[in-house]
Amino acid sequence: MTGTEAHPWSGALPKRLHHEARGAGYRLWLPPGGEGTWIAINERYVRRWQASWQPVIPGRRGLNPRGIVRASFSIPGAGRITVLASHYLPRRMHDARAANRRLTRALATDARRFAKGTRLVFFGGDVNTRSHSPFPKTALQPCWARPPGVDVIANWRHDTRVRLRSARVLPLRLHSDHRAITATYSIRTIRTTKGRPR
Image (cartoon, rainbow, N blue to C red; front, side):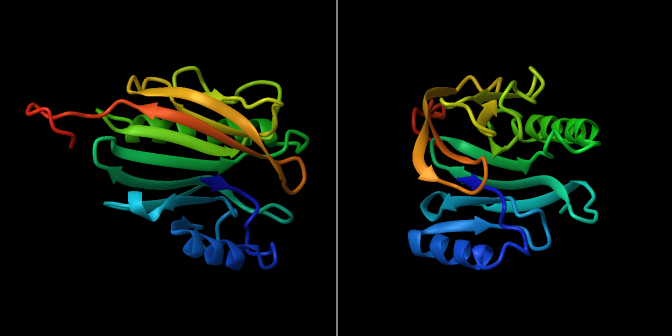
């Protein structure tokens, strides 16, 4: 699960997110001092947990920094999974095009790095566009729920063990132009030479 807008000046939202995540049995990664983008993973899947925050676009007056939030964990049978999340700049900002290109390049680099071998990569975030995918064809494959919004879920294009089953918009009212979307994937199990899942 990923989301945005939980920056330090968003009132009680960060504290509420931590409270709700604990109550629902999720581990929340909301980098302190970051852009407000977060990742929450069900605790039953949290094995060999690693998390990081990589700034890409510096903050300035009226704009919090933007970058890549990452959480990696292992699931028996599925292997090592990395979830990346980010928040693109609105296209109306004068330097959004160049800044968003930097974000896309950083995402592509991270996706390649964490998708090596049998490892899997997924992305969730606000890409601030409805018209087309901001991702290069060699990196992330988005699934666009209908009606399309600015929020996207994607997987690493070359993950042959991953298959998208469905994507839909949930009937939840969110802040501004955001929509709550969900995607269901199937993952082919990794098996050892003895035929047992890892």
